[in-house]
Image (cartoon, rainbow, N blue to C red; front, side, top):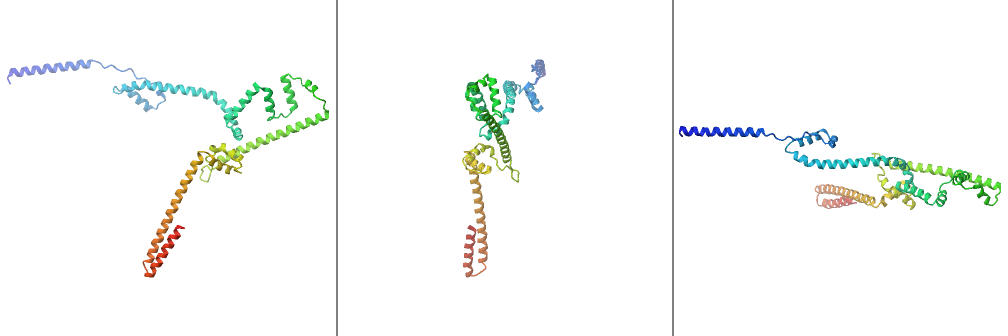
Length: 326
């Protein structure tokens, strides 16, 4: 290569190097647009710190920022929906909790009467509606179940509230001897006293029954396991079992109700069959092992003797098998 050619080549290389450096400097001069500063979403405040940091890194990383921007609207919508549900539930609970606190105390009483809480409350509203729509028939209907302690005083109070002239009503009635009236009032007071005692006894009986039911439901065995684990599931069937004369105690009624339950009875029956099958297999295995041991023992004994021992060995083996199978 001549000196002129070498000089030309060096000049070309220097020119190319200068162009490359200039392009690099121009490219570096073009600033990459920066993303807006990170601002954590409001719904992420409930997250744990590592999760919030991961969300922030997902945004700041240029490679994953597109994924973050795609997920953000979905997360905003989901948390907005959850927030609305929580507000609605809070409002509902604020309104319904006082009502529940009021009516839940009557649930044991309704259960003793064979009613659910919904049925009992529905009956109260039905009576209230009947009192408004047809009080003339509803008050006598209620009088069959609820007796005042002083009937005369209650009638006078009602007549005063309703604007009824009790004197006029009495004047229209036939004459009754005062002694008879006195005896009638004494009888009414006696009946009211007996009715009051009867109501108190019934209430006491209901309280005793509730306590017995609670003790029965919470009873456990020596290992702490419930003795009657399905009591709540079959409770509504127990009064029907007593009414049908199928039981004379709560325990027998419970077991009868379990069998009558459409789903629970089949499930427990299948479990009992499976347990019986396993027990039978274990017993058969034990008998088989016992027979095998007896057979080996018989063969060992028979091998020591002569020909007469052969018959004894056979007899002993048969006896051992027969004994194992009985």
